[in-house]
Image (cartoon, rainbow, N blue to C red):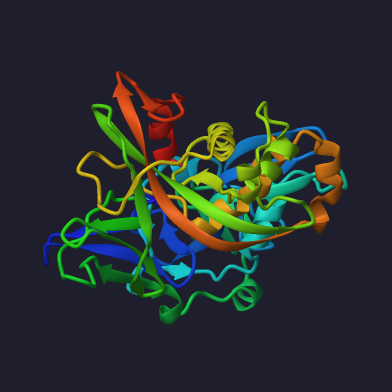
Length: 385
């Protein structure tokens, strides 16, 4: 399984199970059998990072890991080991001593960000946080890397007392929820990395919140091209404080769009849009910006498409965090926007998951309404993020 997988096929009961956790998922790198293996914790963070500056917004993709214990001699990072080696779920019966992390994930995220300054504002979107354990062997009052067979950090009885191991209950935080539709009992459908599953029997959509399935409102923008593919986007209705942005006319003014402001625009609700799937940070911002400016509309259906649909892998709360990034790329007076960014506030009033139609042409998917191209290679890369 991959870290991004959310569904597990159980060969015993022949059902699909949704993987949920009370905290970050815990993985370990398996090593050859040895006595008294001690596992060191490292936080792994993956996601999209943006830095808003007075005149520009920069972006980058983060896939980093940093130690979760404040041990001076412990190597700060595992390098590419989590990407290159197979990972396994940590369970209560996994043999070995797994040290409890002393540093929180948020502290590590801040370490991976650029040096803070008055002239920048950092935003992380779609970040996946997990705990990776790497094996060590205790020899001669030192912990040795189980793979490189070299000493890594001194380790005495006092260190063992200072850094306790996880209890069995602390290891047991993963739950498996049967993916049966709460309405009709049919099997829910979805890709292994999806956050949302569909029931084609009662035409509903579900996500897992806590330990239960919750219904998610959705709509499908009708398309007429062939062959059609549907990609999910979050449509968000927001209330802003600190910037006049309540109508489509307000959007036209702050973005200086090449269209006249009409009386109808003054009364038309403006929506912010964001992809509900992961792609590289530059493309994510491009599609959020273009769909927000275009304000796609049309006839909406409330039935699950029979055509292929792309899995939704970005939750709504992450899409909301992207709004200021999108807004910063739209406004023409970027100095004013940056100066007021700290005072701006927004509240989500309503949201809808909208599947938008794309026509397949070779390796490209073309948005049927906007005529903008999405390269399928970008989706392939995004699925690995």
